[in-house]
Length: 204
Image (cartoon, one colour):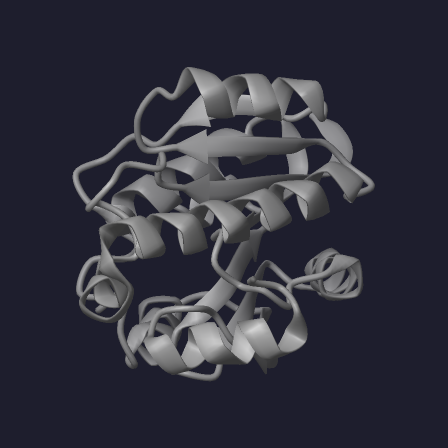
């Protein structure tokens, strides 16, 4: 096992009408797709700057994204599992088979940066699990240092994608010691989040 930390970026391949669906009523399918692509591109740029290896984890094959990832030295993998919870657990377990630590992030947090990733990695050196909280009650990052923690049913009962995701995950991990929670960031799910990201210059 290598001593480094692997960064995984979980992402949906950009498909019209299938990404950022909560934004479609306000922005239309093309607008929602454009937001997704811009946020994904920013996250991949951050991943490429990460000190350790980084891997793009796609929900389905996408040749354009695979070429983009290869061009910035990211490997490409594919999510495996019946639902998001199982896919995350499997990805963490697989990553930990070859790396000392794994950080897993989504692609829609416009303020995720190297300082936050470094903080998560540092906390993971002293604990078994790290969670990067989100202002909406979810989380923008999850990481682990022990493959045994991430059995396939670890997220069973966790209401992912909503305001209870972080609290539910902490309950699901209550049999594990060394769970660290980082200060909250925010992600882009609603029209007001788009406006906030535009004010930062992250979105056009």
